[in-house]
Image 1 (cartoon, rainbow, N blue to C red):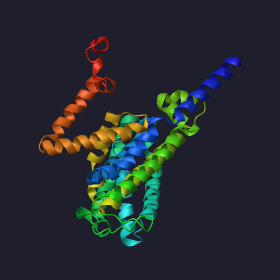
Image 2 (cartoon, helix red, strand yellow; image 1 turned 180 degrees about the vertical axis):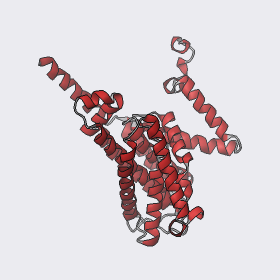
Image 3 (cartoon, rainbow, N blue to C red; image 1 turned 90 degrees about the vertical axis):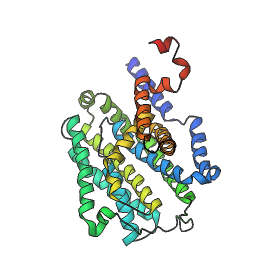
Image 4 (cartoon, rainbow, N blue to C red; image 1 turned 135 degrees about the vertical axis):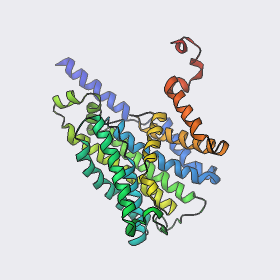
Length: 329
């Protein structure tokens, strides 16, 4: 009994330590919010990084914390984008109300899709997630009277944020708006993964049979995690539509899901900052390589990913270990 109590205390201490903020975390967020002020000419790419980072964090909740590989995560991203655009065009242009509406529709879609994702093996889930994205893209294409079809939903005019901050051509308002939504969603995701519910998701990811044997409702827990991830992906899509004033079939394309998967490969899974760090590296590399070699930037990006996988993320960021005893192994 004494050893069991000691183990419980050690587990609680470990969970508390994992949930505490590290000293570098507030510094990182302060630098993020200072970036549009220090680099006003790069506000547009900062906005893009914030949107992609939120999208990557949402996928990490599915891949890193539940162990489900999804190739159709763009379905929720696209649902959020079209919901926000349609709401602004036909109901009300307020971006905050539109954001709530977009998150709501994506949450409903995620809850419905979780019923199908729970069935079958890993390969079946992979195909189901991909199929959901393709179905929604085709629906958006066919319902051209509502979505604009292949031409997209144009002429979306967004109102000022909080009734005061207008979206400008330089992207400064958009950057601060996207960074704020990213921070709020990140805090919610952090709270979620460090909660008892998040702990059960990690147990399911590590060993589903053992988790089921100790009484964890595996299907229900995964459905909750999948739904929360869908809601955050919808928020990312809403940010894209609201800050660009446009929604097209591109938001449902497979490359959206593939890109965010690459971001998590770069930044790492099961660590919420992996999506943020991976988004920064991916977007900056994409911008740099496409400006240097517009025709071959995908080749160099692919080469970087191969090196990353072969060498390893930890060793790649510590080059002094390449030629020592650790590098010889």
